[in-house]
Length: 469
Image (tube, rainbow, N blue to C red; front, top):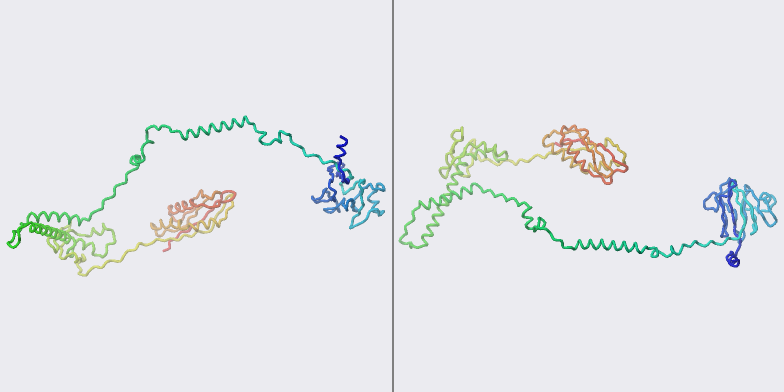
C-alpha cells in the first residue's frame, strides 16, 4: 500500500493554494493545479472576484514569470509574506527597497516554500505552495447499470405486451376480412333500382305553343278539302284523253290543290277583317307607331274584330256599347291610322331603360375602442376595396326612391380571429331601413387577416349616400 501511495504521488513543482476570507469566514478555497498567472478584480473573468478602491478590473496578483511566481502588490494593499530571509511585511518591503517597483506596483519573487496573506480592502487572500493532490478518479456506475438498455428490459412484461398487441391486431384483421351475412333490406337494393325509388323524375318539358294562324290554316284547309272533294263533280273523260288510272290521279291532285287555295283565301279574309280598313282593330293598335307600352292597355284601344266577307275585307262586328266600326277596304299592306290620315306611320324610337347610379363616400374613422391593437388603415382599405357591394345596397333602394340620400354610421367589432361581430347601424338619416340593414350585413361578412393583437377592437365608420343624377 505504501508503494502504491508513493507511485500515485504527483511529481513536479508545487502549486498555489489560495483561500478567500471575508468577515472572518472562508468563502472560497481553490487549488490552481495548472501553474498560471492568478488575477483578481471586479471582472468575472478573474480567478477571484474582488472589489476594492483603487483596484483595477483585472490585476495580476500572482504573476508567472518563467517557472517562478512573482507577488505583485500596490500601495493600498496590506499583509505579510514568508520569504527565504524570514517573514516580511509589505510596507517594510516597499520602504526598504526589498520589492522592485514597476508600473505603479511592487514585485517580490516567491519560492515553493513561500506563504502569506494579502489584504485588499475588506477581503483577505491566504496563499501557500502545496504539492498538487492526486486526481480523483471518475465515479464508476454499477455493473447492472452499465449493462445497457438490453440488460434492463423486463422480458416477462415485454412478452405480455407483445402478446396482447398481436391478439388485438389479429382480431381487428379478422373482423375486417370476415364475410358477414347481410340481411335483406334497403341496403341490398341495387343502385339502379334505388335511383328509381328515391330520385324524383325530371318534370316533363313544356310543350311548344303552336301559333293560332297555323292551327286555323290546317283545320280550315282540311275542312275545305273535304267539302270540295264532296261537291266537285268528277270530270267526264274526253275523247282525246285516255280513260286510265293516270287521269284519276291528276284529278285528285287538282282537287287537293284547289282545296288548299280556298283554305288560304278564307284565312286571309279572316285576317283582313281584323287588319283591313282605316278603322281596323290592328289599325287602332298601330296608330301611334311602334308598340312599346303595356300590351293590355294597347289592345284595349281596339274597337272590334270583323270577319272578312271577301278578299278585300269585310264589315267589322260591333263591340259591346259601340256603334258601327267600319269595313276593311285594303289588303294586308294597307294599314292606316285610326284617325283616318292617309300617311303611313313610321316606327317609333327605341325606349332605353334609365340606369340608376349612386355615389357612396366612406368618411374617416369616427370611433375606435377595445383592448386590442389594430391598424385603422387596414379597415379603410378593406371597406374601399368592397365599396361596390355597399353601393349596390344603396342603388337597389334608389330605384324605388330616386331622391334617396343620407348618412349611415355603422359600428362593428373585429375579433382576434379576423371575423366581424356586433355590426349595427347606430345612425341612419336616409330614411330607408333596407339600406342600413344591407350595409350591416355586408360588413358582417368582412374578414381581416391577420386580426387584432391582444383582444377585440371596435370601429365606427360613416357612409354618405347621394344619387349621381
